[in-house]
Structure formats: structure tokens, C-alpha cells
Length: 251
Image: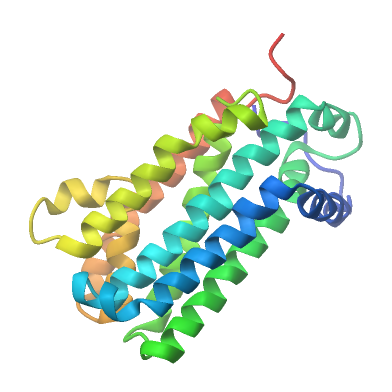
């Protein structure tokens, strides 16, 4: 179970985070997936923004960028990191210290979450500077925060099914392809047809939130309703993580 022992007051969560930062920059594969690939794809999207705007819209480009970074950069790295720390018994050793379960996970996931969030912010700011500011920046910010939280939760749930970092290359594929495909589907075709299905699929409601925030359109009530599916995926992922997550390798 993820929730377990409470953390003693004042335990240095940032000490775990600092150690994790060092591990991230030593692992070339994680460095590639968490930083280089998302930035490279995002730079390509911005360079070709006129093409993407013709296919869908600038909001579609913003949503696609968001999901490339949070799926390839954040989600995949979360699963790989937790699987690696479990395999080398680092999670088990941390649990023998004064750290509580939540403190351990927070420390391990804080660096990559900050990196991914900063990447999204910088890329979207550059996109806005190149193509024009979004119509509703606040809605875009809220959509980004909700998406990051959802992908983190999905990463925790997937980590429970992942035995090793190598196995993560397989277990992360379904969610990664699903959210990217759904984002492209909603971004290109909108929600005039199959609206309920598109919004219920992972990434669909988040994409529509970004579209509404960047392009304008959709009332406040409609936008608020879109947080329901995002929150549902978040809660479902947390429940699955609590049930499936393991601190030690399977024997």
C-alpha cells in the first residue's frame, strides 16, 4: 500500500529529492526520455506550428506538446524510476529509515515533476510568444496542473505492474500511445461528435480544456465539467496504485 507509515515531522524530503536528481543525471536513458526527447519534439512542433494550425489549431499544438512532455517525459520516467529503485532495493532501504511512505514517494518524484512542469511552462510560453497568447491563460494553467497530476497518478499505478526498468519500456506503451492518440483525435476533430466518449478517454478532457483555454470557446460551466473525467482518472489511478504498488521485488 502507498499510504502507510506517517512521516516524522521535519523529515528532509528534499534530501531524497537531491539524491534523485543526481541519479537522474547519471542515467542516460532517463535523461533522454525525461528531457531531451520532449524538448526536441516540442521544438519541432513550434517550428512547424503553421502546419499543425492548419490540421487542427494552435490549441491542438499546445495540447499535443503538453502530452508529449507529460507522457514521454514525466509518466515514463516515473515508472522507470520507481521500478529501478525497487529492483536495486533502494525503496526497501528508504523504508527502514525514519521516512514515511508519502515522504519517500514525494522525494523520489519531486525532481522529475518539477522538470516536466518547467518544460511545459517554457515551451508553452515560447509557443505563445511565437504564435500569440492564449485567449484564457488561466484555464491553460489549470489544465496543465490537472494533466500533470493525472499523469503522475497513472505513473504510480503503472509502476505497480512493472518489475524492472526494462519492463517499463513495455508497460508504459499502452498509456503513452493512448493519451497521445486521444489528444490528436480530440485536437483535430473536436468534440462535436462522440463528445462523451472522447471526454471519458484518458487525455480527452484535458485536451479539450487546453483547446478552450488557448483558442477560446466553451463556457465556464462546460469547462468546469471537463474536470470531472480528469479527476476520475486521477482518483482511479491512485486507488490502483494503492492496491498494486510494491516496495520490494516479487520473489
